[in-house]
Length: 279
Length: 172
Image (cartoon, rainbow over all chains, first blue to last red):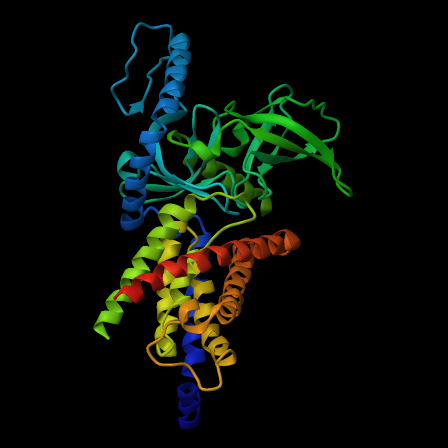
């Protein structure tokens, strides 16, 4: 025992090092799950505050561009609703209808931090649990899909961008509904890859790619991008389609977060039938 | 001593802010990613006890993790360089040892010494960090290219930024 203590003491530098590395790896593994602690990501108080100040300064510079886009989006929406009102004072847009039930609810927010040049990119949004955000909600802009919410704190949330190695969004070709997961290969932030497209599908350059309802996170039909090129890689029986993303992930400012009202119900049902068939 | 601690703390805050507010927005494509904040660990004085260096490195990494959403990856890479710094300093030590009270920069040790010292440490940090980030081997050469280009990028940045710090030290 004494010898062991002596040994530990003599090599204390090395053991402290091992201990600290162990803590790091532990944090890393714990955070890999979806419900990781939100203390060590950018939705915590200090870093969110710093990013908010930075975003405030940046927003000023992008004001003109953003205004143009909002004006365009406004006319687009006005044309669609064909009703006489223009301003919606609420932050949450709810609609009651006797014929249709509302499946998805949209909430507006702002991205106060984002990146495109890392292998795993994240966004920080200025809305959080107090505004009704929970994990696994979809994040879009008027141009296309952006990401999926991962962690939430009281007033902020942190979302994985679609430029992340663990994000797979189910997408489909608009014209015939052939679907597959959209995976980013880590090279160019303007493009992503739609994989597992069967070779009998008729693809053309410029075809529209939209989200499919299979994901259970995104509503069906949200614009993702356009086909840039496609190839059949050696030893694979599927096409890999290079998609030019319609949203510019370098210039994300105002976003909409989408809540799927029946997510828990759907997930638990799917899980139940899987468990039953496994028996 | 107290004076020194204050100076080092200010350097810490400046480098973290530089990393988070400025360098994070420099986008040179997905292959060159700059992490000049590790200059803080490079510039700790020679006589800092090795356990303190280790603790400082760990804490610096955690701070950067908080801003970068990388949960433990920067902390792991920084702890590794905090550990290896001791052996690298030993390896590169001149015959008469280091003068106490100096910090390892170009001014005190000369440019050749500093280039060797910082290039080795930056390379270790980037190698460990990028492979930990991807955590699989199917993008091996991709990542290797990223490590090499980023090391060169960070090194150039660090070399320039460390001049800023010893200018202010000299005036005092």
